[in-house]
Image 1 (cartoon, rainbow, N blue to C red):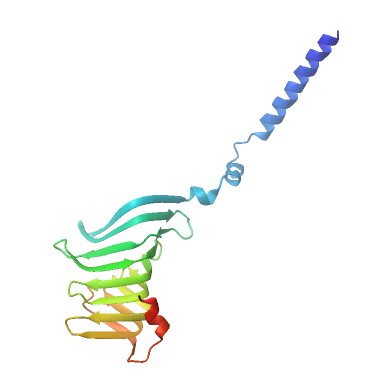
Image 2: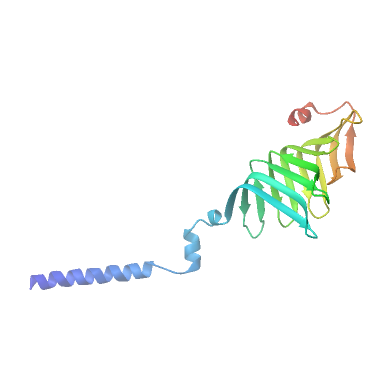
Length: 194
């Protein structure tokens, strides 16, 4: 008789455990999302990427980077280039006419803008070069701009210009310094351009 009670205890104990586990398991998507790390699931990483932008079946821009982190956030989707970015603006022949380089960059999908930061350099075939701590490239209007301190060197003219604020076309053939400075400028701004 005691063996019968022992078997019944095991049976009911097992039944209680089965009921407990069946109630603790859930297929509710909200509960699954709460358990998983949503931030981790919304990120894609890629190494040694090349991104091509085309217009009328012609490649106009080529972006290369050692690392890209894509954030799939619905509110603010963006691509980050934490190890630097190299952008080539291409002519109809497929040859580059200007280049943009920076230590890091972020492309905001909704704004169609790339914000290049940290030793940003924009230059053309004539070796004219703009350096700044930040440059913003707008893909829609095809212009580069900044409100930061800039230095522009033009070796053919033997000229170097300094100022705050800048806007140029992608070819870097037309540009404007918003507020030029002569020999008076903040020495910290110059240090940041090195």
